[in-house]
Amino acid sequence: MNSKVRVGIGIAALVGLVLALLAGQGISEMPFRVFSIAGLVATLAFALWERFIWKWKLIRYFTGVPLIAGTWRGDLISSYIKPDGTSVPPIPTALHISQTSSKATVTLFTGESKSVSEHAKLIHDPDGRWRLSWQYVNTPRPGVRDRSEQHRGAAEVYIGSQPGEGLEGSYFTDRQTDGELHLVEWSSARYGSAATALAGDDFNEARPYVGEN
Image 1 (cartoon, helix red, strand yellow):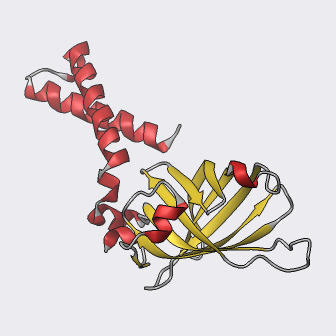
Image 2 (cartoon, one colour):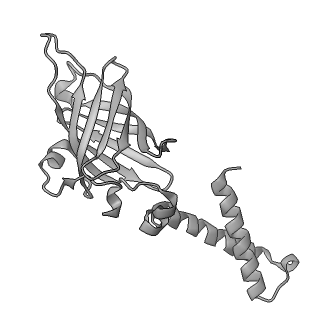
Image 3 (cartoon, helix red, strand yellow):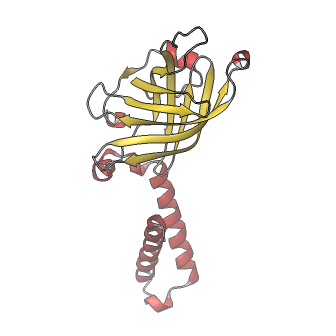
């Protein structure tokens, strides 16, 4: 049984017991209405935890889960070699992360395309570091599809632990290309395109677990 389900059952049972005792009833006499209220309270508690409570600094002090939601900015370095034999210069890139207690969504923007995650997960490695791993679908802008088709890929970035360390990692695609991601600036704002994100003036140097700063 999933640990969250076990916790939910425990919360509902505890709430039901408290309500019954406050009503002066024995455990065997608890009416169905008490269990319904207990279930409602447990559901509300889970919803608040999923969206808000887990973000509180005191809670994350114990869980250790990094809060990295927001827009990150930096460069994508591709291994692709052009037909003339030259490499692609670093590509200015913005990456937006939406995050709840159990789910993350990643959207990466460049001037030519947008990648949206199909599955994303925060992973806590044995060495204590956290990384964000995701699979995505990349959709190029119509004007570049003659040389860049829609494709799939996977990426992961490690979350820095010192001031100035942002998100550093790599990616690969089903077009047999790969590369690196270096994202060293962060903003709490949500941007919808590379143009606006790259022109934004509210970005700051990345800090560990940015939500704490």
